[in-house]
Image 1: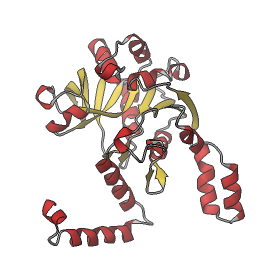
Image 2: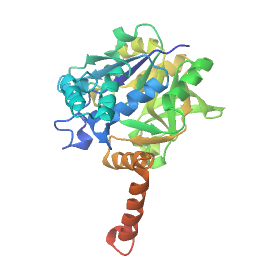
Image 3: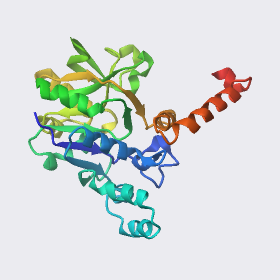
Image 4: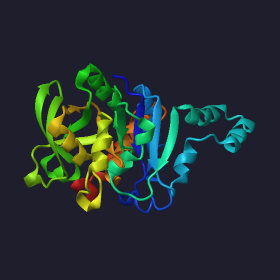
Length: 299
C-alpha cells in the first residue's frame, strides 16, 4: 500500500503556550534553532512521503512563509559568504511538495483533516500532529507505514500512559496481536482516569483509509462542539479493521511547557555541536541546584 500524502493540521491557536504564541505560530517555536514543524516535515520525508498538506489559518502567514523561498535573505547570506547557512535556507523549500489549506475557525481535529479531502483524493494518507516530535533510530511515521504495507492498512500510533494521564488523550479498547500491534475495538476521547477502558493512548501519528473522510463529514459535533478524529475512528473500528502500534522512540509533547523544555534538552544532547558543552552545563546546573536549594529538595 503506497502512502504518498501526509496531512499536518496546524490551524490551532496554541493557547497552552501563551504569551509566546500570541503573534507567532506555535509550530514555528524553535527547538534550539529549528522550528518544531520542520522536524515533523523532515520525519515525513524520511518516511517516504511525497506530498504534504498543511492545514493552517489566515493569521498564520509566517507558517507558509517559512516553507517558501526567501530571495532577500539568500542574497544577504551569499553576499556575506555564509554559504553553510545559505545551503540550509535554500534546502527548506525543497524538503517536499507542500501545499496549504485554510481552516476558517477551529472546529476540531476531525474538521481540520476534512479540509485536505480534495488534496488527498481516494488514496490512503497519513496524519501528523505538529506539536509532537519523536526522537529515535527509526522515524515514527515509518513504523506505522511499515505495518500498513504489511496488510494492516489503517494503523494509528499508540503509547502506554500513566493512569492519571488518560484524560489528556484518546484511549483505546484493544486486543494484542503481538509485537506492539493491537486490533482496536473502540476509542473514547479523553476519559477520566476512573472511566478509562485502558492506558493505551492515541498519539499524533496516523495512517488512514480515505473512507474516514466520509465518516467525518457525517459526524455530529462531540465534546466542546468540535469534530473529533477519535470519534470518527470509533465509528470506523466498529465495522472495519483498525490497528494500533506502540511506536518505538521518545515522544515529546510540545503543546505544554514541560514537554517543550524536555524536547529542547534531548535534541541538544543529540547534536554533536552542542552535546559536549551543553551536557557539562547540565551536570553543573544540577549539581548546583541539588546541593541544598529548594529545587534540589524538590528533585
